[in-house]
Figure 1 (cartoon, rainbow, N blue to C red):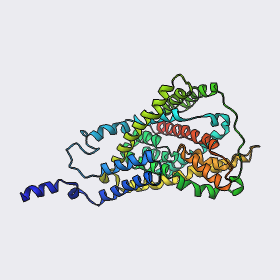
Figure 2: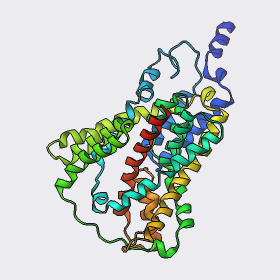
Figure 3: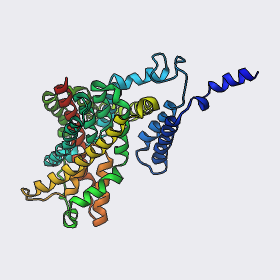
Figure 4: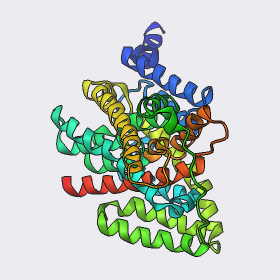
Length: 375
């Protein structure tokens, strides 16, 4: 009887766990806490946090329980990440939720979204300098776009062994936009600049809204064909939204489809952070480089906005440059919050959505360019 009890105990997670599992379980609880208590990207952090818990319950190899075992349910669900299936479906949902009107009303604001992508390429060079292979450096650099699906898609294609740390880093920094960006915004802008009011945008016609996703898709994908899976689905979702006659499909894309895929992606990405795979020196470096990349992206947008003001008659509020990172719509909300702290009557949100959505397009193009060059 004692032998049976000892055998049972040796099969439990209590016996099999080591300090690394405990560290990751605490990290998963922190993610869940930030999502629920602090409302930091709860739709992302709660599934990822719970996935971290699932991935760090110690199990015997061969039972088909670990995400890294070929015969496990989690492994099959994880194929949507590894094969790059989930990110394009999320992009379709984003497209079906996105209104490109403010960007079409003042196209010059698209340049801010492009400028913010500097974080991707500077971090790519930094990762190379630290000894990462070119494919790994490209995947790490894309964290600066603050676009989780794009980071996962590119990493799945170039460095699938880094999906765990890169995905967790990308979504962590997306969730922490309200914490990370304001200090950089205040450091690089004066109070006078933060008080600049934006002129009312022109009214964009329905015809323009319908034509835009078609023309934008062709222009962007001819430039960066490797971005086709992401941008194709993004602009398809937007066309479904604007065409009206396909509203039923648009509703499915921005509700049931994106919600289901977000749960599966978050859960499996979290579960991939199995302690014996995740906790290593490279993961720490990736988190550091991700923070640097995100900071550079934010600063690049702000500085470029100030440069643009040297040539524009109608000045733009430099805070809008921070919305060039593609954390939609959180970085646009941060611009609104920081602007209203200076002047409660200054409404920047709808203007900030222009560089915000162009940042989504820019990060996908950046990923496509890196993929095509590395391949």
